[in-house]
Length: 115
Length: 116
Image 1 (cartoon, rainbow over the protein chains, first blue to last red):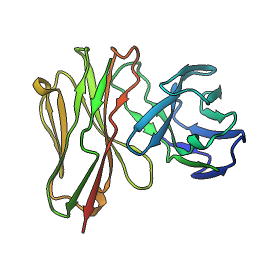
Image 2 (cartoon, chains in turn brown, green):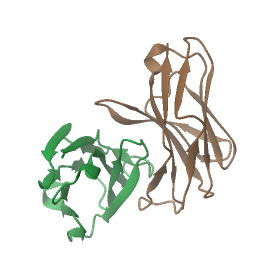
Image 3 (cartoon, rainbow over the protein chains, first blue to last red):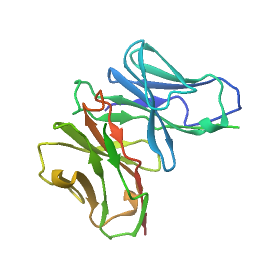
Image 4 (cartoon, helix red, strand yellow):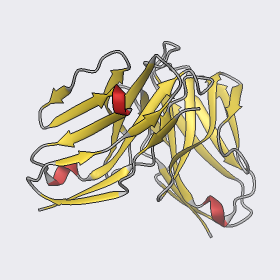
């Protein structure tokens, strides 16, 4: 079974702090994603990565950066957390194959609260 | 551009009722895939089904069934004899190349609450 794990289920940070959200997958998938989920807005793509050290902006990259130094690990970084970044953050992978056939596997999510 | 619309924000039913979750999509692709995912209260989205644009056969899996109609650009999901364990947020998604890549486009989700 594919496993996508996220470093924390719940996180509370203060405004201005630097925040790292870690995601690790064990299936050697090339593509990894970070989404945020807010009530009424569904899933919004922040960043994705299609290979080590490669990254692409999603729909809402402002205020975030990412790092992918190893294939299995994809980190989301909030350089200076703000209250409007309070949200549920979901990491996902995409099964390999390079086509629209592929489904995603998701981690359990990190609920981040910025005070 | 791709778009997925789930017009029902929240549906509340009593156990054993049948319930249909609607999904309408827009795409310029002729080849594309549609997906449904379930997000239970634990938070992790789980893949339920995939359908390609050339296969309009309905699919049934236990109490779950899916109705794909290209003519109306819809991919609806029906749960028969709902149970409390079906309570979750359900997402419909579309993947095709017109978005510029194979990144899936998600609807906003429908929250299903099944009361005992």
